[in-house]
Image (cartoon, rainbow, N blue to C red; front, side, top):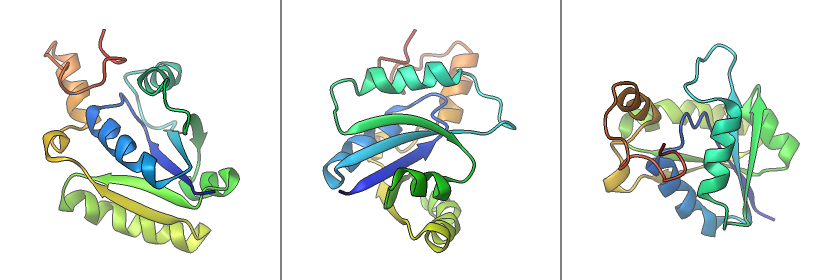
Length: 150
């Protein structure tokens, strides 16, 4: 069984995340969307809200599981018997950030990282931008799935 983890904070899930998830699904038997918990990071949405956003977005998809974790992603992959980590790349800055992490994860846990290039129409979207638009009462409806829209 090919099991992959797609880790992130998902604060909130965006259409960029949805793009990567949908494109990763045919590659794996199971995709675990793993919400990382970082006590030092202040989130806009609670863990429960983020889990619900993702579950509602993918309620029809049986290959997706949503879990939360703390600590190292490599250790989480070992505990879940996942052989792959999925990461989305928007640009070369993302690649430069993700490459040493991927190499470390492989060294620690023999887990392969699979990089998918974001579709051009969502490559400008990040959770940080979405939160900024939300905080300033902007229209974020074209940036997130309907499960996030209030």
